[in-house]
Amino acid sequence: METIVAAATPLSNGGVSIIRISGDKACEIARKVLSDNKPLTFLNEPRKMQLVNVNLNGLTDKCLAVYFKSPFSFTGEDIVELHLHGGAKLTLKVLNKLIEYGAREAEAGEFSKRAFLNGKISLDEAEGIIDIINAESDSQLEAASRLSSGEFFDFVKASQNILLEALANLDVLIDYDFDDEIGGATLKKVYDKVTNLKTKLFSTLNSYEQGKLIKAGLNVAIIGATNAGKSSLLNAIAKSDVAIVSNIAGTTRDVVKESIVYKGVKLNFLDTAGLRTTSDVIEKMGIDKSYKALETSDIILYLVDSTKPLDKTELEYINSLESKRTIVVLNKIDEKLLEKGTQITKLDKCEVSAKDKLNIDYLLNKILEKAKVETISNKALILTNERHYKLVKKAIEHLKEVETLINSNETIELISFTLQSAYNALGEITGEVGADKIIDKIFSDFCVGK
Ligand SMILES: Nc1nc2c(ncn2[C@@H]2O[C@H](COP(=O)(O)OP(=O)(O)OP(=O)(O)O)[C@@H](O)[C@H]2O)c(=O)[nH]1
Ligand SMILES: [Mg+2]
Image 1 (cartoon, rainbow, N blue to C red):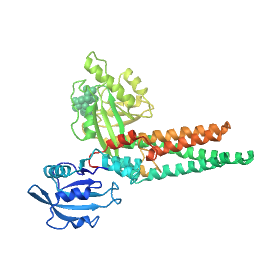
Image 2: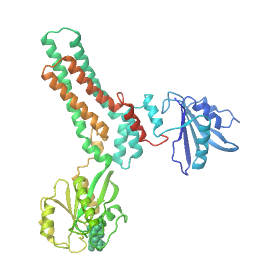
Image 3: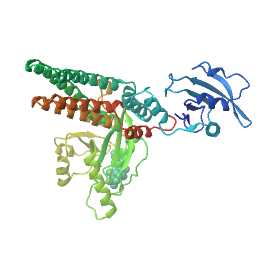
Image 4: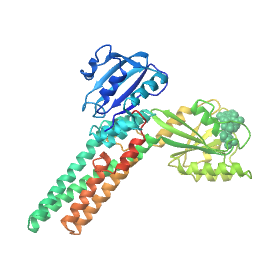
């Protein structure tokens, strides 16, 4: 494998900038940029830092160098890290020198990919690492760190072991000539194992609903008639003027998105164009988007200007909304609050003032309650990754097929083959089984230097 190099820290000004070199020639190449006015003892003492000089055609600077000897490194290969003074210019100069001396610039995620190929981490653990890097909320971070620490890996491995046992049971039936009674008892054992495993996988599969929320955040659409105060509410929630507010009806024409993290959960708010009949073509396009946001979001905040009477059509429309995901927000309670709320039945209601920022926290809590967002630590295992979800689902399908095959007295070979397919689906999660293309795709989502 070629020796690769990249900055492991962002290329900008900061206290320290770290360059990572990985591969057979890591020591040899690093040595070339380090001044040899004193012995480079760090190369004989892995994991121990040494203050050395870095030499760039006459320019000398100090840096800390450390060596991780294969296989005891992140990639499993020889790694040298140089901790330089933070600064893009210096880092780029050193990087270029290392490339000149024979290292190749690493591709995105190449260090992690090598770690995977060298058996240091599994594919799902690598996906956990990328989730840690991208985490924006506490729940995302917690889910990511659980994934990267191998919790899901252990579950998948244990499930695969059950399938291996079942396959071993079936093998005995293929090799020997058993009477019906023994054969039947063995098949029953296999059947029970498959059914139990299927139930476990099902409950993991169901956790994806929650996992999706944690990973992508909860989408909350702010809908309502023009001038209800939708944009004002978005600004109050975001604590910043992200959307234009005016008393002209039809101010918002497009969807304005803003995310916040509340109580460790990412909430993505969508402020939309006010619903009304209009001949303005652009506004109409905006209103189409409002309906789309209404359909696709997890939670709908239907905003009502509570100082004005509700007309019959709007009232009917509000009452037709899905109660499971709708909260009717009666806005402008700083002014006169009409009794209109009582006409809205079956839907949760919440009174706020977007202008005076009254009851905003109360509303945010109501949203979490409505979406049944649980804190992640309450759950045994939560699937957050779509790829994992699809593979668990695929494994379940194969297990269902095994049950049908056993029930219809199909051949042992066919049952074994289908069990093996379930095993392989789970193996794709960890990367034990897998196509190079999928592996490449996963690592290409990483940043360079990771
Ligand atoms: N008194 C009072 N006025 C408010 C409140 N919220 C919004 N307003 C006013 O209502 C008017 C409309 O506010 P916007 O936030 O632009 O309303 P909108 O629903 O986004 O309107 P469109 O984008 O046109 O659909 C503005 O004059 C706001 O100042 C509130 O809580 N109390
Ligand atoms: Mg608006």
